[in-house]
Amino acid sequence: MATPLISRLLIDAQTEFARAIEHVPGPARGRAIGRLNTATWAIAHTTEFLDYWINVDAGGGDRDPRQAAWGEAQDALPKGDALPTSYDEAAQTFARVAERATVHLESWDEADLREVVHEFAGSSWEGTTRGYLVARSVAHLFAHAGELSVIASLVLWDERDLGLPGELEWSLGAGSEAVDAGDLQPAVVRLLLDAREQFVRVADALPVPAQAGAFDRLNAGSWIVAHIAEQDDQYWSVHARQLDADPWLAGASVKFGDPESRPDYAEARAALDRSFERSQSYIEGLDGTQFDTVLRRSRIPERGDQTAADLVVLQAAHLFALAGELAAIGSLAGADDPGLPGRLAHVTLGNASAGCDGAGGDGA
Image 1 (cartoon, rainbow, N blue to C red):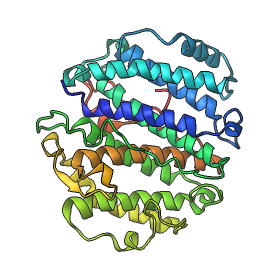
Image 2 (cartoon, rainbow, N blue to C red):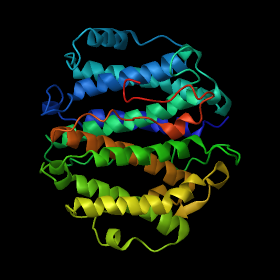
Image 3 (cartoon, rainbow, N blue to C red):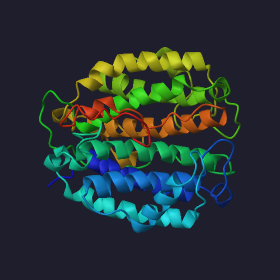
């Protein structure tokens, strides 16, 4: 039995979140920097939802005892207060919760992911499937990995860039899931469509200081937006369809590894709209029968050629990770928390019932 691609992506997301935990240096672990969450709280919070969504709601098990105690103590505090927590304890709890989640993810097939989670009966999430919770967990983990990377960058002197989304060893080059062509896109395609919308939502709420690069140790918001647009243009227009690159993006110097730059935000944002508009119909038309088609010759030899499935999972993970970074940078500049991963309207289409609207952010 092949593990569904969306499940493999969640296993990778857990690995990347663990890598982000290790990346945060000691001075940034226990204290809040500006308006950011503490790194410890971000870990405990993310672990809370991974445990609930995968091990309890989807897996039918009990909560991790230590995480349950943390959640109850946190809930007892006034809204906005963060429970003091040991960084090592939070990291160890995440590792334990992720290990349990991986056992479930490796055991579920496509039919299992389509099963309705009955614990939500009678609530606004009635009809929610295991697959929805898996996809939502992917988005949540990558968004908070991006948040942790920003916290680390504010303190680290060398090697500040964590390089999200990482190697994705489980979901890259592993072959596609067994999905027949049909009216409903594969789960990872729907997650990508949601990731594009959520990234735009965060980009549009970014305050001007964060757009222009007010924080010297962090990427400018304009660079992040243009970088995402350049990747989208290369993946889906240049490589997938052999179209010419967007002229502005071709000269913007925003590829990974390019020298630091701060492009104009309005131009970067317009380039994102152009690229997303140009690639939207192609992505919407992807189905499982196309997933093993090679679209791109990788610049990283050890990864080999990249298929349509590879580009889908890479971009979905990248978008949520950089949306998390943008949200953190925006928070430093005074923006409200956007509540990532937000409403995953496209993933919601995979639910058995329209009763689950996927509303809300972390707490939904």
